[in-house]
Length: 394
Image 1 (cartoon, rainbow, N blue to C red):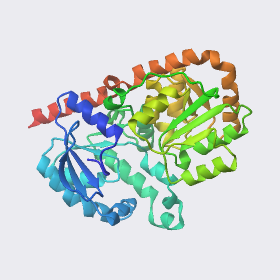
Image 2 (cartoon, rainbow, N blue to C red; image 1 turned 180 degrees about the vertical axis):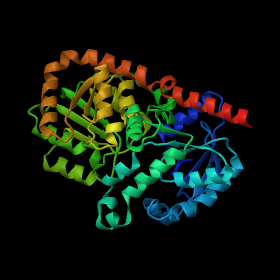
Image 3 (tube, rainbow, N blue to C red; image 1 turned 60 degrees about the vertical axis):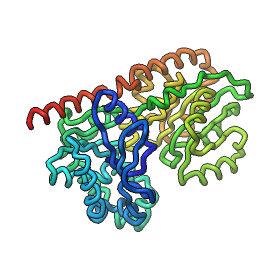
Image 4 (cartoon, one colour; image 1 turned 90 degrees about the vertical axis):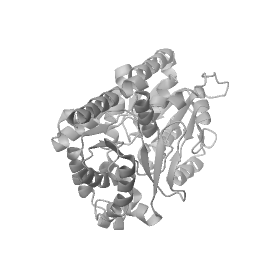
């Protein structure tokens, strides 16, 4: 059960593919604002049922745990799809629609698994609407946290991105450690199959940085631009693949500091363009601003960078810093501290001899942390045991 259009969603695609590879039958229900509704089939994945939601209903999802109107509006149609599919377990992604699934679980006596892509109550603190006067009046993050706890407690199992995230919920909610399953974010089989051999560059830049993903303020892109402007080393190129509503502020800063020749914003691009950018980059970067969510997550971009053996620069958000230090495959700096990042960018020129080792370690990190056999082993083992228990009980 996914509360948005599909595809794309690399995490959902990866989990479905892994489960299918191990003989499980998977159907997907999505909430969609598309005009097209009903059944359609995704050739390379699984049957998909689309439940159409209106624009107003979609906007009501922001108030999902203030008033139950959103869940009341979508539950009936989701329940119809569940009855049609008749699953043994419902796997629901994120908490926005999870209360509907919890109600359906209780009615139909079908257990559910909760898959937390992110710490939604913490991330919502950064949303522009939530920070506005009307948002602060209408949206209770306390209620979101309270319901998140209740949903975790009622779930058959909760899937999280990192062990750090599991530890966070164990500590915050006094949850049982064994109630969590770790499934990190990684590249899909389809993405891996499109690999392009890295190429040497003849452009007049010593260092080519690459960022892939959402460019909202909390992602730290502006910090990188400020550090590039302040650093004495001007032979740094920065390619940004992604977009957000914060782009106007980024463009304005680039123009103001005359960084147009060194910084290129490409927007959202296709898979081939992502591979081409990865094949040409010297470093991948994940400059996240610290918060409780960023401290406990590993972004998919780290798997993309390490697939191409790129040394990786990260801010000191706990989970990503720990991983980079564990494999000695890059550098970290203090999040939000421009002088710390400036010092790092300046020092890279002096440590170019270390790059081959960092590249080798980066690929080793991919092989140890991000291959499908590693990432999905706990998920597959859980479902094998859970379905066997259901069969035995019936």
